[in-house]
Image 1 (cartoon, rainbow, N blue to C red):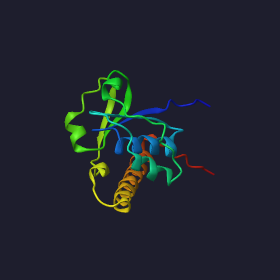
Image 2: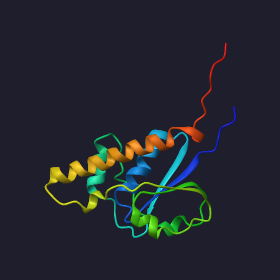
Image 3: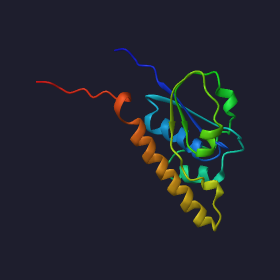
Length: 151
């Protein structure tokens, strides 16, 4: 049996603190057998503690992930470069080794204000939106083969 090469996916947002970190971790957790996931930011800061908390709630530990600059990945080959906010889409450099660009604008949970519970509720909602998008985008079509038993 021939083992297929994993497709490489780079998630990009502005600060590489929440949305792109969540996307990277979810793709790895859900479809790590088919994809290698990475993330970066146009203006990286640090992984948001609320992102760490809401991912831990679903059994995914991102506490050891770190924010990275998109420049670190410019000359690597990717099957997909995914921008997860409009700002990153506007500022995202061209990746010479990218085969396909995808874009989905998610609300920036790190911009929200309120009580601890209100902030966590927004982070959970964004996490769940990203889960649904990742599942709908990467668990179908060209990336999965359906084999039908005959006879």
